[in-house]
Length: 314
Ligand code: UDP
Ligand code: MG
Image (cartoon, rainbow, N blue to C red; front, side, top):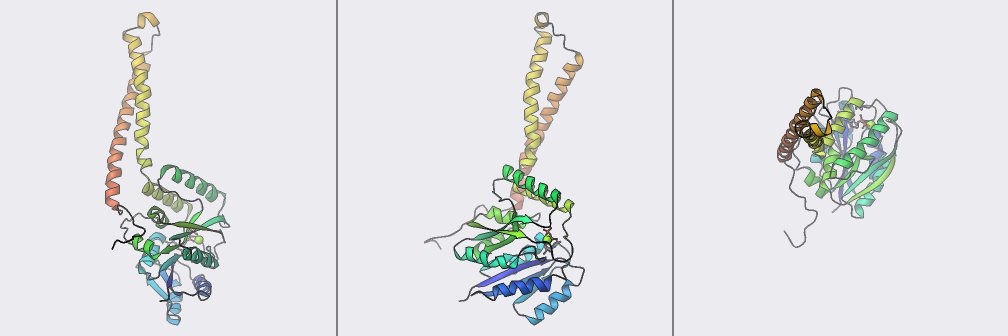
């Protein structure tokens, strides 16, 4: 049977881009041996996107659409599209043509060679200013230092997922989700394809810097409990340093003052004692954090493990 490739496109106020992206995607897919479907997810657009989508779906049965009841954000919109897709492979791509549709050929090629997840890696972003670039540099450094899933710097949402990855992805129930983070967490055989991100064609990016910071925070929090534990580490450090300091100060004061004659001022004694106590409080916070971390991991209810392939097992 002819295999199907699904293309998921999240759309938020992209009326000027939709026709062009669908046209370019279709011209790439029409040249392959696969059947295909395009799933346009209208994420509560307030411009004329709905009208454009409507006319496209009427004229071409390969084009399907999902209209969300309001703006839920790109992550939710992509998840909606992925769960509606029926293809043997699902490709997610931005509507603003920052992800060159022609790259789909290479994504599919790697998939044919046996990769389960093929990730578009941005080597250059013509739309990003220096602040965005520096931010993204540190984001990848930090996230890879604190989380157990490796994330290649420049990885984008432009990626292909094999059906078995899609099925696992659809099992996630967590709300604060970063689609690509979840996919990275899933593992499977990954391959990378590099591209240069073009400038957004029309309209303006809806992710402000503030939103990007929130996204970065969300994803670090969902990838790792390290931020939670910082207080605990700090506390342990303070307790050990000021514990030793306290022992020295008070031993000198009450036992060896006649010998050393340091005459430690009362305010120093008080300070050492206070900071030591603050350290204990922080250590306790760290303990609480460990419990919160375990509650979070239970609540987000991720699958315990993911099977990639079975042999001789039903
Ligand atoms: N998008 C969406 N919902 C939103 C914001 C964006 O579906 O609330 C879509 C948008 O239409 C585009 C993609 O997500 O197809 C990427 O958005 P954008 O270009 O604004 O982000 P950036 O290029 O900065 O990642
Ligand atoms: Mg964009």
